[in-house]
Structures are given as C-alpha cells and as structure tokens.
Length: 283
Image (cartoon, rainbow, N blue to C red; front, side):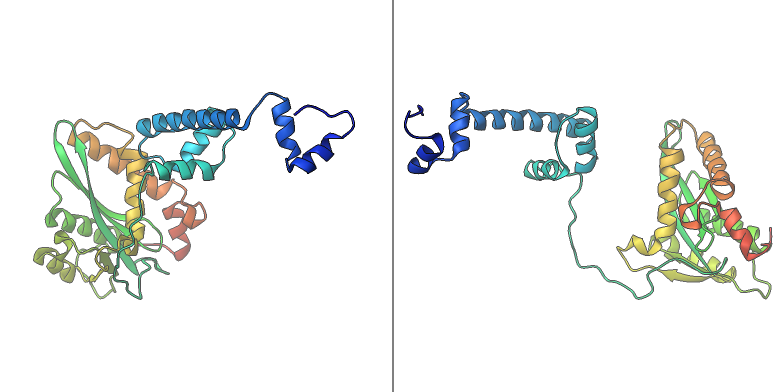
C-alpha cells in the first residue's frame, strides 16, 4: 500500500478495514504466506528432531524429551507443545488404559510397629552363563528392612520357604513360634505363595497369610518399590556373567540397603537406624 499525501496511514487502514500490523508486515516485504511457510518448516524440523530422540530413547516421556530440546538443543519450546506433538504422532511412552479393577478397604501395606506385617515377593534376572535366576525377598512393612532374602537358580516355593526361614531366624532366633506373636505375611496370588507347601510352611512358622486383590500390585507397594531400587541401583548396573557373581552383588547391596542407604520415607535414615528407635530386636 502506497502512502497518500493527504491521508494518514491510520486513516487509510480504517477506510479499507485493514489491520496496521498487516501493512507493516507487507511493508517489510514479509507476506502472511511466507510466515506460514516458515512456521511449517520450523515445525517439520522440530518433529524430525523429536522422532530422532524417540527412536534413540523409546522409554522417555514428553517431559524428558522437552528437557533435552530445551536445555541441550537450546530450543525455545514449552512442555505443552512437545506433549501435543507426541500425542499427534503416537510417540507417548505409555498409554494408561482405565479398566475396572477390584479394590479392598485395607490396601496400605504399611505397619506401625516392627514385625507387625511383612511383605514378600519375587523377581528374576538374567546371567550370561547360567541363565535366569530368582530372587525372593521379605520386607518389614514398618522399618523397610529386608529381613529375609534368597538368591537361587530357581524361583520355586522351596526358595520362598528358605527366605521365610532366614527372616524368622533373624527376627526371633527360632524358625517355629515359641509363644511369641508372629507377623502377618502379605503377598500376591502367585502360584508360589498359594502352593500347599508354602502355605503349610507359613502355618508352621506361625505366620498369617494376607493376599492382595488380583491385578493391584500397589497393595504390595513396599516390596515392589524395593525391587525397583534393587534393579535400578544394582542389577541393571552390571552385566552379570555367573550366578555366583549375581548372588554376591545382590547380597552385598541388600546389606548396604539395610544399614547405610538413606530412605526417603524414613526421614533419610537407613532401615537399621529407623528400627533402632523401637528398641532392641532379637538378632
């Protein structure tokens, strides 16, 4: 638009129903079409870069992708845009599917006193030479201390019974009850914990079994969280070659976990330090 000598630019824009910013953009030689093309090019480059990150780190969510783009690639971008682009391209790390699941009233696995409730579960890991091995663990739901653990080449009821035996010996000095009350043992509904041999051993040891609702591992959250820490800080940090190497590393880390590792839920005390406030336990 050329300037009229007798009329101001504001007046001309008002008569033609034009926005003055449009006039200034055109005066600078940049049309709306050029601006849109520039935005499309920038978006295409961003999507290509995000695709590279998703392929390289497939377990990352939109927050971690955004952090990389913002602080490593130095792109001026917000989280909402990254989330929107990942949803549009189906790159989200996980999709939450809401399905009906039964719930129980007593869902928390915590306890107010030591040896009031124990929780038990199992996991497995792979060794290059010896294949898969099993890990059984028993945790005190009050102090978060691992009172019993068994690392073996198999993950059967026999190995679970050995973990319970070590827990009873550590806490009470005896496998079978001698008048003292024994804790409630919480576990999932796996075949190991519902087998006749294991349930029979629990009765002999004076333990009352407590099963969580199917498909609700959060009801056994303490032992599940312990196994996550074990994997993140020990198992996934080493490529174990033999069963002996894995057992030594796991037992050493569990000792560190019980005596030295600070626990957030315990005020950053170790389980042993936190349990000391409840009095002397039988060794």
